[in-house]
Image 1 (cartoon, rainbow, N blue to C red):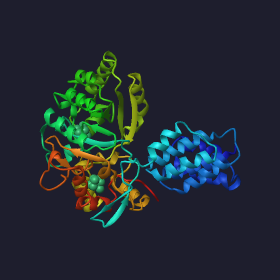
Image 2 (cartoon, rainbow, N blue to C red; image 1 turned 180 degrees about the vertical axis):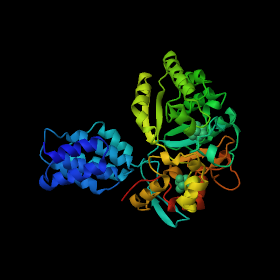
Image 3 (cartoon, helix red, strand yellow; image 1 turned 30 degrees about the vertical axis):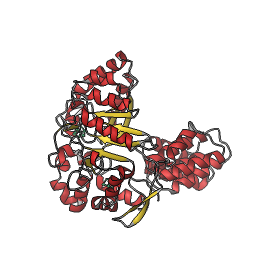
Image 4 (spheres, rainbow, N blue to C red; image 1 turned 135 degrees about the vertical axis):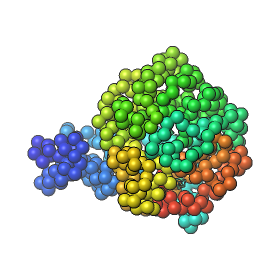
Length: 446
Ligand code: SF4
Ligand code: SF4
């Protein structure tokens, strides 16, 4: 193998992307038709959000077969990269191209289906504040319409990256099961043709609710799917949880080292979490529960090297493992960094004073700059068109990214139609600022 290519593949494998890019380019100067180098260069550019990478990938896929280059695996991996960079429309077009190239990838039909805009969504919507029509896309968070419902107001932890810790005190309390059933009834009446997914959390810890099992059962009785997310610091109610069998259960953590976990999940105790994870696995087996359980691993610079250890632990219990870079929430917190200018914000912000910001894999300000570069401004925000968030008293909040109420005067979900909620969202000044600052949830398209 040529030296440049060998070194490029090795740098690529070790995560030295800029080194690998240079070496691929040098190799291609002499071997312009090398599929592995074209594909490697294309994938690195896409990973950096540069769509020029797709041209290199296409060239690699149309070359005559090469025993050292598996086109199906390469195409599948490019698809994952496009999705991770939120190039959803490009991912759909790429998938459609593959069949004309005679390349098949695993589960192509369901991947295609997942990328097409579902029939319950109109293709675009007028934003009255921005004064323009915004295009929609296939939702990234769920393939159903989502209701995120805080059945508890409050959390036992104080993570500095969460509004529970970094915003003015949030309302406390618990939702009554009777109110929840009324909410489900209204959802059913307004449902139309679309499938529903209910999340039993927004900014809070659902296992603090003494009747958690009843809420999960009520969702199942309505034929909707359920998702619970927990920090699992309390070993209480695991039995009720597993008996009730939510469809999905995510356990979020950052590190198995208390000195790190205790900062990212202030007030938390990782030894208790591990103990609860083991108990959860045995209860799942006892009740023959079909709940899909996974550990959501928050990646920081100082937790990245624990990926293998945490993944093996998850797998040893039959749980899934999903790593993702830790981010700063809510949107208000990032807005205040932008408003103050990153430097002065560093002096005052809670997150910076906890020295956590230096541990982010991607600085919140850099993410916003990258978003600006990769977005045309033509697309809508998924948190407006595919999700409604409800607080424990039954009032609606603007979305799951903020602590803003829907309107200044609280409105109960029971007293307003789905169409009226949407109308208010598309007339909202906070949404306007959020979209203009590229802090919303949308796709990349340039
Ligand atoms: S465990 Fe979750 S809800 Fe609680 S403070 Fe941390 S991020 Fe917020
Ligand atoms: S535009 Fe921003 S504030 Fe409005 S719904 Fe989307 S993420 Fe939330």
